[in-house]
Length: 80
Image (cartoon, rainbow, N blue to C red; front, side, top):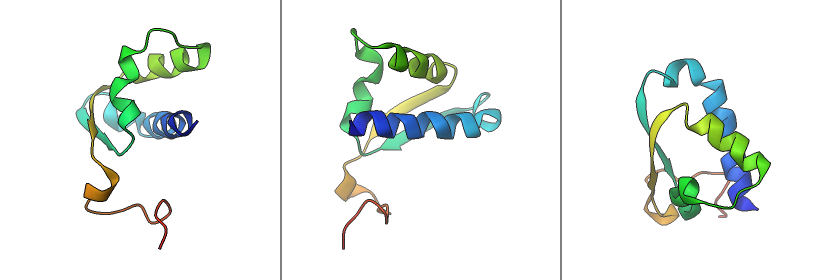
């Protein structure tokens, strides 16, 4: 369920920054490869339908970067 958790965080962040992002085109960069296929799903449940309805309001592109290739690693997501 990592995909659901990451998507839930993205939806929350987009709602918090809605005022700034609605009129702009932006790139969503993440290290979860499943997000690239978010809009290609055919059999989804009600929760995902609501999330996708929120996402289509924004003009963005999803870009996947492997976790090891990111310049700044997330301090909470990495073990020392």
